[in-house]
Image (tube, rainbow, N blue to C red; front, top):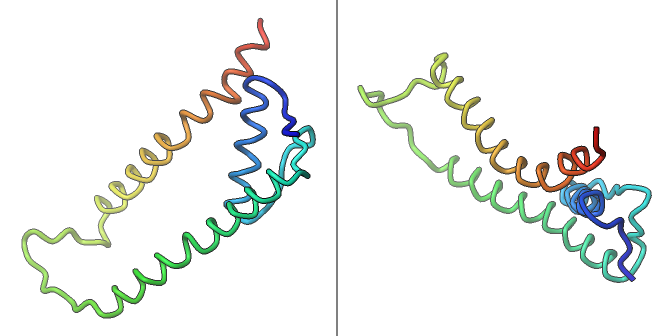
Length: 118
């Protein structure tokens, strides 16, 4: 039987269990009873996807970059050792990270905090 708290806290428990499994940690909240066949099998699949689903494309990209030849610098080339490049990478990482995690945070911990009342 799948047991979790109802509402926002239950969503947060399940989200944390699968996020942790994808990161190969395998932790969960104490109130989530993950010791049943459904959670055991799906969390194991999540761990495999987290490990091999990331390692295989990274190794493929590394091989592709190894075979790539250098291009001559032109007026359209963005230097990778400039402050502008660092700002673009940081801004992109913050934007993509925020857009990825804010919906899940809004459905879980933020709603749970708002439901606590004044």
